Length: 301
Image (tube, rainbow, N blue to C red; front, top):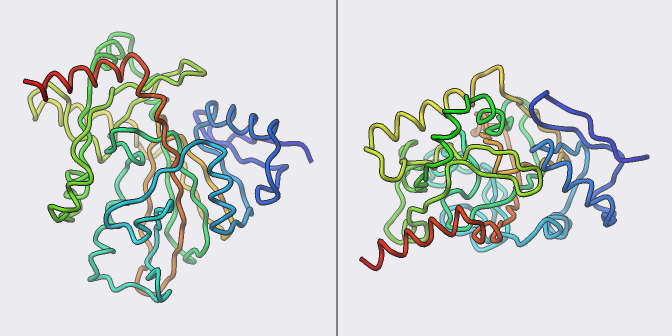
């Protein structure tokens, strides 16, 4: 069967058929995947069960993998584990456990790893166990949100830098890092507007981790970020993915936001394994070079 990409929404997303991921990917097929990610931002591969090692091998095709740090249950590996199951025993974690407090942050709209100095290219999430109800992952396009702006509005947004702060985003759901944990993730700066180097299309790097507009008064910056997020995440713009065991979904963290939806964490099991691909080459772009020069001048002063 030939590779097929079936659009999910007019703005973004495609279901992919005609391939078996765990049998290995040819160079031409991967080139098609890479092109499709730039075009669709979200790729859904139904019924493609993977082991951990198979997911790692597939993920490495896309670029360097991010190691996971901090409070995530899979800390110290290449996986970010999205689950209510204890990694050692496989039993359901108590709702009073700090690990579940941490994971409530995933119910916020966000893009993965924007709180890191080196942002991510994409994430790959595989469904290992899914609840009978709830536990969807929802997506919206920040490329569509940018392209909906007027030319004057885009010009202003193009000039802005955003500070992303993991402590702020987790604090929004009442979770507090210890000083040692917070030290892993100091605030970082990114251009508000991201440009895809292949297509030239632009998108907004917003979401829960976006804490402030650099050089703007706090209230003014917070108001703009809230407005952009509100407009991007209107219900009619959302794709909600209902997981089946074996599904694989890849999304472009430069051009979409996502969030988990609630489920019965006391009586239902959910295990999702996420790998995240780093994007170090973006630091060599003019926008990031300017930010780094500015940051270093502030440190020096």
